[in-house]
Length: 463
Ligand SMILES: Cc1cc2nc3c(=O)[nH]c(=O)nc-3n(C[C@H](O)[C@H](O)[C@H](O)COP(=O)(O)OP(=O)(O)OC[C@H]3O[C@@H](n4cnc5c(N)ncnc54)[C@H](O)[C@@H]3O)c2cc1C
Image 1: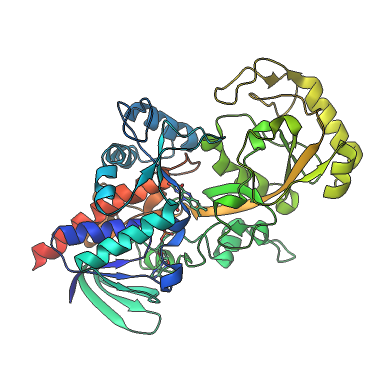
Image 2 (image 1 turned 180 degrees about the horizontal axis):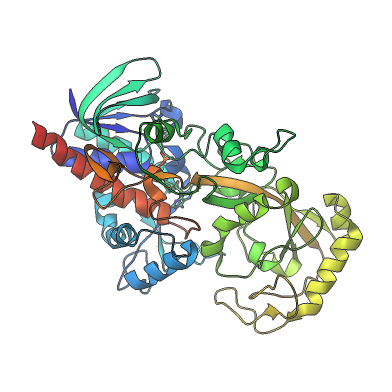
């Protein structure tokens, strides 16, 4: 029998497996994906948000624990577990040394719309390289890794883990277990249930695209909730970016994100604006735009900019629709040209020009317009104009297993002694809503390591 079973094959699972092994436990990791698709959403990542009290290698200036906390409070509207959030923040300041030990390399950030050079450390080669390095290290340390090993359910004795049952019926026992099998973002049926289905059998979720893996079906999340584990979070809350409507249903990754929202305006299929495009810096807002688009008719919207904005954002993988006048843009997008011209005329008339500066919350704003655009509001007047179609792109869902600083799974408020949870499966404890770029990997790394350590302690104390 193994000491520890880790279920999942992404960042959180690998951090747990490596830490449990470091502590002397024997570890088996079950990844539902085949080798070539291993690593879950973590393979799509680029960076981790890290606090630091002084400039540190790839991180510029200072990003204090308090500023990090204030950023999180703002984006979540206070729906966060302060104790857990502060653990993730604190751990983010030291985890890079540990990550490097297992082969992760960092690189200086690129400039661009995301303004991340002060706050986020970028992985050399992205999340794919990080995941590959962790797998290599885990193998070297003797972690047994099983691919094509989807777990269907967990066998409990009271609130204690006793075995994992694979889809093929195989039963694997261990002294302790870490669940790190992602959210339920890849499960369209569950998304439909969460978002509601109308009389015609339609749901907003029919128009969602999934930015990452197909494998995060939420099988174990559902299984554990049905088995009586405490949960936290609203199933419609998620990290949802506005992504190019032409992206594939799964695994479009970061190159399908549309990052020019804050530089122009966004309209729905009625050619009406519906939210402040300049509310805050893009890393603190990009993850709500998918949800905003999800609330629009037919879950479609269009980001429109003029040529002044070209070069100020990371170009998306698909080319924009372009034309020298707004009527032509409208016709190509199948929007009402009169309505779109009116929306843009109203917007242009409301712009109070200040000093445009995309790196600060500048003074370019609208007056007398609803909704307002509070920063970076400059008139859309210089042809050619560009438009990009937007759909909700689900990154990961926030419905989670409730936990505390030990990462134990709870049943009726009581912690299990040998069942722990990490990563997306518990991120909703910290993220009730909203998101700030790079905190997903901060949560997964911090609580993956804590889960691995505590699982090892639980298992080795039992020996
Ligand atoms: C396009 C994209 C870009 C992102 N960029 C960033 C970024 O730059 N920075 C950041 O902080 N966050 C980013 N995120 C979010 C980040 O990916 C997640 O927060 C983080 O990777 C979650 O790690 P995890 O280990 O919990 O989940 P995952 O990495 O998704 O791993 C879950 C694993 O569980 C496996 N699994 C699922 N069900 C089962 C089962 N029943 N049995 C066995 N195994 C199972 C899956 O195959 C997968 O390997 C991004 C996400 C996406 C989609």
